[in-house]
Length: 114
Image (cartoon, rainbow, N blue to C red):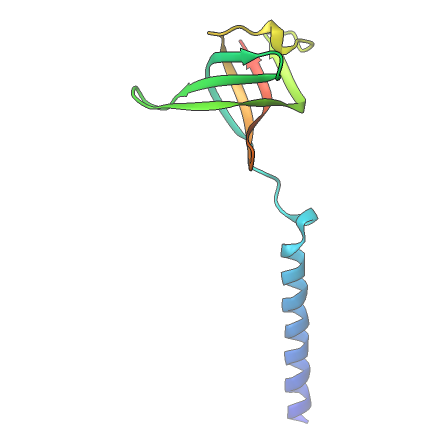
């Protein structure tokens, strides 16, 4: 009688482990990609390719470059205006940039100037 309970417990634990492994391995249930938010100055804009480059100062000597295309659903804001396009921004503008790392590089999710 004790042997039957032991095997039943092993089977239940095994099913629980398989379920947990399947749950965490399923791509649709995986965590969302990390979105980073930084402040810096626009150093380049390419309207033809819908890309922007922002230099973010980390320290006095270190600068982090965020550059890449705008996401299809990117939000662009200039002051209180929300209906703006990339052509409304200028090199030298101080902006908040939100970006997502991808296997192809950075994708800009938000570009907001003050």
